[in-house]
Image: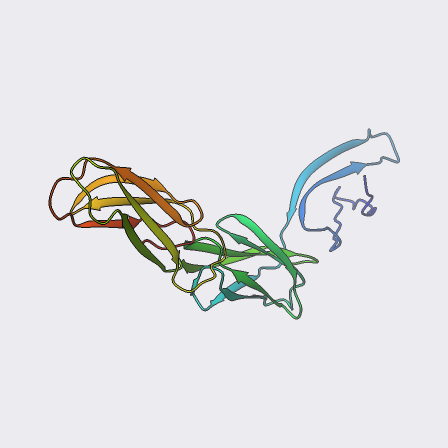
Length: 232
């Protein structure tokens, strides 16, 4: 326990004490009466909550929409009516930790790289030092999937009824090279009817069929996309 100070009791039985040394947080304050005459010692306690000085955090994302593997600059500023806040900013992406950056004159920044397509909630949480209280802000960053191209080949191009035919779909980034190997599934169609599905391996998916109807068939393929690459 830390002794804050000692004060005498007035003729009316009152004693007061003031301090500005309590840190931010909850404190159990105990007053202990130390008698000098026939009275017994007694104690009393109370809980004193010390709040930090209010702060406001602002976060900007520039730009607010980027393709996968591109970057955006996150800028965080913390202000207070009671001075320049010190401490750091904890950045998160949909709740997952990105990094912690120290404040300099109330500001800091982080370069964000979009790794998964979708809408991301980026949050800056002020972690205070000194007499300031925490605050936070967020912005939305849209990460767009990378475009792809699909090429379908049929082997053999002409066949007899019930003979096996192999459909091969080759999927590639529209602007190679991409940040990672393409993954996912390709659905093959005859007109509007799905006739098979293949899983990409090295950017290639195949199905072999012996059930194509006689005549001219309108064969197509559709790549379903992934968290990085767009459908095609």
